Image (cartoon, rainbow, N blue to C red; front, side):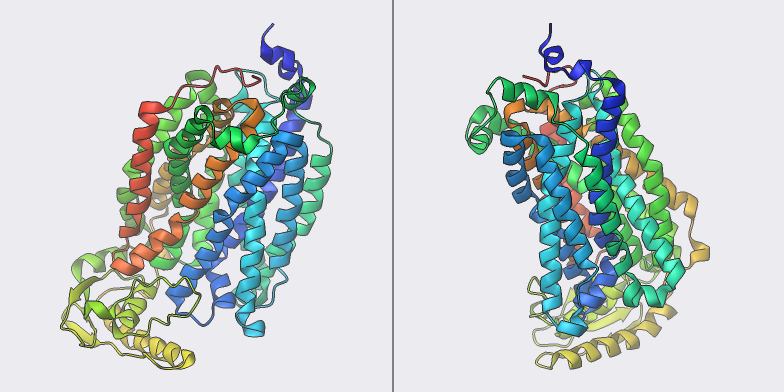
Length: 554
């Protein structure tokens, strides 16, 4: 008799396995819904919580606040991973959902910067930290719990709904946002209606807790506990013993960092790119994203099912390679489809900024407003970035005032250094207004024309990105569970997953946007996910083992 059979996983009735999958997925869907609301509302949150910054910098800081929730995820992974390996899977991921839900509801009740000043941003960041901390223990717990209930040979299919839960949560978040927008109207939604999607989490939280309370401990952990083999030194065993540490490093550098940048580029940066850089109306972006994400849900399940038959390795390698091949041509096609006038103007009437290099900062302020980007170079770059216009920097003599050349038209910038915050903001606004007629005359549109959008091409390109992301993500839960031994699985699994997804993936949108703002090329930010993905492809190809036939109850 195999160890798997002895553990009881193969003897679980199908109806109980379905309950385990449904309960785990329902909670995970809710947690992803909570987490994605903020990402979808980043531009609106920037206006309410970072109002003193230029638009481009406010959005960057809003995205950094989104990313901080992802950055703390490894801490949650360590805390809840140790708890899951020592005391059981069920308790750990029951606690995560309570913390996640409470933090999300709290965001819906926060005062804004107009009411309490900088404290509003501080409270928002605190809530995001709690969300990320909880999410750090959620995914690993759900994936392991389902895998340890699933019969050998069906783990990919059994965990597929956990993988698809991210898309379902994103559809739910976008759907609620779109419905609230339509009911309240854009002005009311931007003023106060953005709170409603956060507050609705209270209902979803209650449902998810009730569902998870119905679950029992996993067969693999019960077997481990009965034999007295549960780990009391999960950290030391996972990270100080080379035989386990090398698996953790392989999971991070061979899979998770590529999955992180690829998934967040496909699902989040494309959205920011269309809305912020290509100037596509938010409602159109939301509808496009909802369409693509709905298409993606069955693809997670399909690729997970395929991996049960042909192996995890070829399916995930296909996803990584396709993603790497798509980054630059894909975003060029998205630009052509979503805003053809901008694409044409960028080629026919290039824009340059002539400035003293010492006058130009990196355009990323991690202090939330200590640097006002008030030099003539920074004001010119901010105006062009806010307009979604690519530009080239041309060096000028030291001490000279920056100027913007739109074709043959030259507009001299202004310097607001040393002025109060309100005056600096007024100067930036006035220069942007003075620059706009020259951009419009050169063919640069103030906004994307909805009638000119090629929706078939736009959605088609987005679907290719999603195919790559789902091929990589669909089999991932089963592959990671199969990679680690049972006694340290929760701890060792959760850390590389959350570092890859949280640090590499979560920072991908803000890093890409900062590179775009600093260089002036709307496609330059793609070098970050491109390089990360290529490194992972090499590591994965040479070192990743095939795991689909492994016994995970050892």
